[in-house]
Length: 309
Picture 1 (spheres, helix red, strand yellow):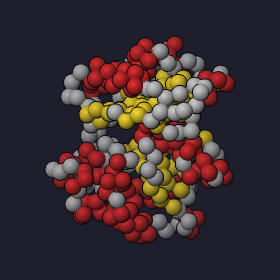
Picture 2: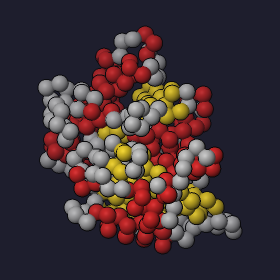
Picture 3: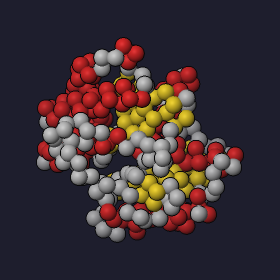
Picture 4: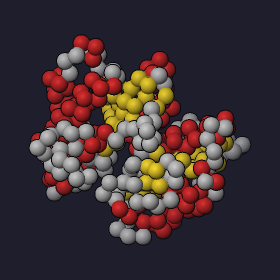
């Protein structure tokens, strides 16, 4: 457990942040400046995941000796998400299917709870504390790719994140990047997730992600470049933000291969200035960004209290 105490006399509003994944569960408290003041994590257990998560959250809340008081809980988790019930329906994680995550976490924490996918959380974090936040004009049009255990994304247009028909726009892990390639957990052939998600990479090498061979790191960069070229052409964006454990672990060989492949895949003149950049945003900050948006919408009446649903 890592903890950072603040010295302010008056308690300040912050966020309870939770990031759920197939291999790790993270929880923490984040202040309104995007700084993580308490954090903890555990390996996702093979069974009894919900009790393990509630214990993790309880430890984080008890360990919060800072001046930050969480007002809203934000969760990032694999999608798709049922926006009506706040349940997650992640591919390859049947244990979570139809579990009323928003309602149950609301009862445990006593807070309003909002649930989002990692790529969409990354977009909100980028607009909050990332480069886009420093250059508001750039917030108009960009896309994200979150390369974690799986692959997820988002699209921001005119400064607002696009929702799609069911609120799940951004499932870019299921773009086809190799038509005769590996089988994805969704059952399709050649999805980006099979090549650029940590679980897919580890399955193909039989090694931990940090021991990925150079050739596979470069292959990952190539597949991500293909996806980025497709996204740029489809969405007319000049900025694609990539985050997550995969790029941070694979490092420069991944980005070098991505850049080389992108040069060959992007030929449209209006995409000549396309920039694909890596960011090191903490997943708990992405989850807190989800909570921050919900807090704003609750204050303005745009969102009903999810805990009451």
